[in-house]
Length: 259
Image 1 (cartoon, rainbow, N blue to C red):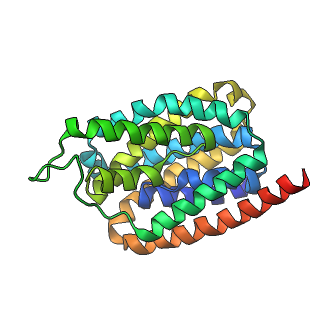
Image 2: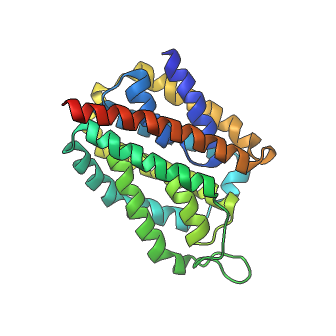
């Protein structure tokens, strides 16, 4: 139970400060820290991530930055991918799935080291406003990919959504973070629907402590986010992600070899 609170603090900080990171840490924390099987860790992580995203978005300043058509397109496009990823995940061995998850974590960490600075993209008009009609194709494609990751790994997708919104679509960094939280919440709720058959078997004591802590910390972290150097926070979390990826990868590889 204490570990659930500790991990909830880390995930709430990540989501509140960066608009990402909760899910990439939640699954290995639940599997290796709390001791849940992958079948229970994924839906539990989805609840935790949704709670922390809603907490981080609760600030009025964040809500004002949300481009609702873009966020909704992302979320809706991810629904089929979420169910497909869930079905695929159930057919794979846990050690193999966690090894793939470790590889994803390495990619995410490298992406964090490079940064998420916004560039001109297909959504941005010359005056800085957002052209939602031009956003539709790329938003839908990115949403489908993120949805698949959500179903497969219990990943809300913030580390994929934030760079996509900033670099591919042209949203500013604050807009990308705010919109990412909406997409994370939508993807996580859809992922829970795909895992509905397993919800009755969850450890609700762990779930309440983990999700409640993550949400409360995320609210506080969101208020502090403008006062801290974003690049420093992002790189610190990248090192954490890399360290966890190494542990998960080694453990999963040993499991596959000795199976």
